[in-house]
Length: 313
Image 1 (cartoon, rainbow, N blue to C red):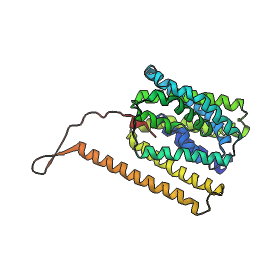
Image 2: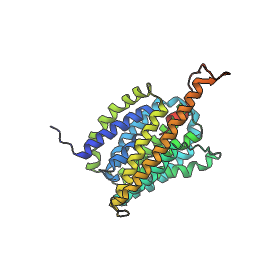
Image 3: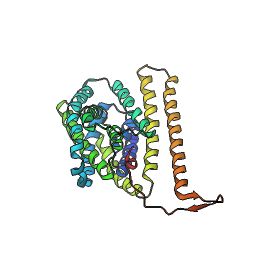
Image 4: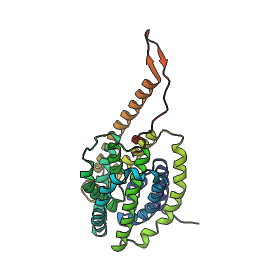
């Protein structure tokens, strides 16, 4: 009989869920896995295992969307150029910094990005080539410390109007580079350990099962609704993790420290209510129109158009 502790059981469950989301939307594995897994494991133990998994996962995403690479590689090249120095700096910080302070940094970086996307922020950047290198450096630091880069990348690519295939190809290209370079940096800095690589036995089967499940689900469910539900789950978990680490670091006391978690839940519920109300209003408008006499008539609908919003998380 296999003996599993609470951390291993949770890791199997969350990686299965995260892999399902990744199979449906094209990314989201780390941004869902890390906030939950950090409750049981430090960044230094968790990150090496996740990075090795993501080398394979991101390569698969890029391979599937390879036809769109010629359309996007010039646009993402400055970001790729900024990744390498950012990854080097972040990997060094991971190998030397306090585990609890790294957890705090992870939650503080991820939470605003989740809430910005939940709020539907859309502000295109006109000088895209100028922000590429500094943005890439920031993403490199974030990924090498937390293994999370999906939220900032999705926020940028959605704002810049990448369509479905281009979105996934750009994301795949950048994440193949960042995961490969990070895996190499971890090796050179001696970050890998038996405890870290031992987590692979809990993660790999979940990924192998979750990816095809996600691909199946997304063909039968509205992608934006699925994305938004996953985002709420992520926000609530990050809020809980942030409250817990604030208490652990004695920056707040229990139970008052959980006020942060409560605030995150209230903000997300407000944004979630607005999302579903807006969706309901759009559906009503699309299906009917007022006619003289106060009646209504159905309007023939065109085939739905896939937008980048269908892919953010």
